[in-house]
Amino acid sequence: IFSVSIVKFVKGRLEVICERSDKVGGRDMDECLMREFVEQFKKKTGLDPLANKKSAIKLEDAVTKTKKILSANHEAGISCECLVEDEDFGSDIKRETFLGMCKPMMAKVQAVLDAAKA
Image (tube, rainbow, N blue to C red; front, side, top):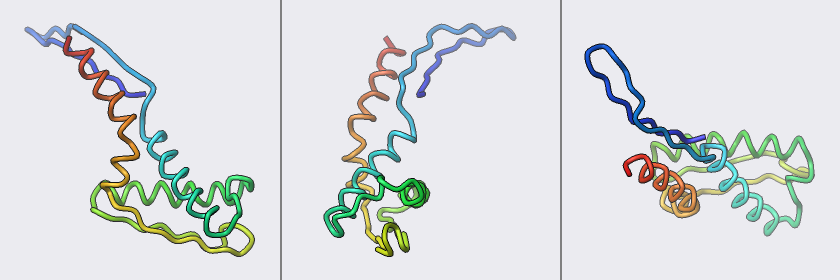
C-alpha cells in the first residue's frame, strides 16, 4: 500500500491535515517483471515456470534481486539454473524498459500524490 500523509507540526503539536493511499507497491513491480520473464521463458522453451511451485519461487527470488539491481543500475540480468525440467533461464532488462512496464503503477502513485495536494 502506498500512503501519503500531509501533516502540520506547530509548537510541539502534530496535526494530520490529509491522508491518501492506494494499493500499489513493490510487489506489483515484481509481478510486472515476473510476467515478462515468464513470457520469455515460455517463448524459448514452451514450458510454464508458474505451473511448478518450486520453479515459481525460484523465479520470484531472481526477479526480486533483479529489481533491486535495476534500482541502482541502467541494466540488470537474471539467471536461473534448472528453472523447469533442467532448462536454464537467463535474460537482461534495461531500467527504461522496466519503467515503461510500471507506468500504470506510477500513474496510481501520482494520483495519490495529486489527491493529497488537492
